Image 1 (cartoon, rainbow, N blue to C red):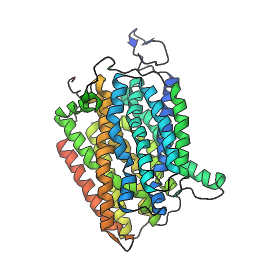
Image 2: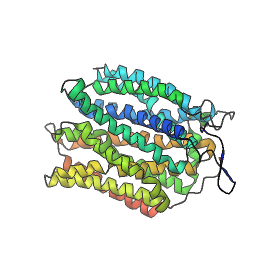
Image 3: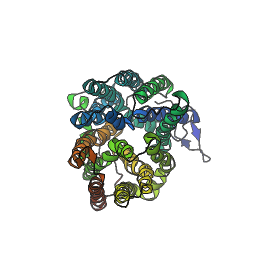
Image 4: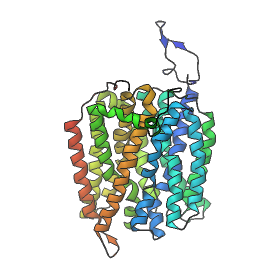
Length: 425
């Protein structure tokens, strides 16, 4: 059984209170620090990556492939999550992966050849991307799943901390030199990954829930979680998540390139204002899920996504830069209400023996297949509206606005609030 850090307790009427409900403060703190480090190690270098590639004069297909290391890395998630489900405790798997992240982020920072940068960062992201599923599974195994956003919010805090670090580093460590657009953020990511790997040794034990069950090819590829798609509502949920990633990726992967083109100096700090707001909105996700249900919570996230691109579109059309900040500040509602709400929904729909694989499936569908399609599609879209090296962003944002609105309507019409778990497979 997981170590919840305390003896069994009893309510005032003498009924035993579950260990999950009495998870100690120590466990909650360790899970929170885990989430903080896991997202900081990535945000510190991913947010300014597009600007760094531009400064390296990496464009076209090379740019698209390097920006695709995140979705390609998601392909490793089902396999790694199967290992955690059936063979080794999740916190040990997470520790090994973070040591790998530290090594390959460090090596990636030393590359000047885009081909080698792609290969090394791809291996690094094959180590990193499964950690999103593993940290969610570890947190929900040792803390009430419906309160998971209270732990996940520290990932947002870690994301914000990366921007605070970039500002502090520029003013104190590097003597006023901006680190955005350089290789320094990758070194910072490697250092954070090393700290996270060492800290993970203190996490509560989270044994494999399906230990002893045979690991067939279907498990090695994480395909058993696909059985969840026999539930019509879950299949609709997955389909909309997949399609949502296409407009979402435009901002997530290429936003730094847009803001740098608009004259923003501190791109990482500017974009991370969205994560700052996310810290506060994340704690509202459990309230929204309880009072509004999954459907309306996720609709609020898609509404914010539509507002983001409408603000960027209108801001360019009317030459009102202040509207860009609306697009930045709604990030917390998009990520928290849509994606984190979706993670909680997935945990409730999946049988206990498949929860890590189910979380891996979400990462694979959203940040793997969806982001891969979004990255190449959006890079192609930008090239189509590029003249003499200058991108006309206005029609790009118009297309993203319409796509986001259509997805919001589709979710409203097709998706039903149905928290009933899928029958065990």
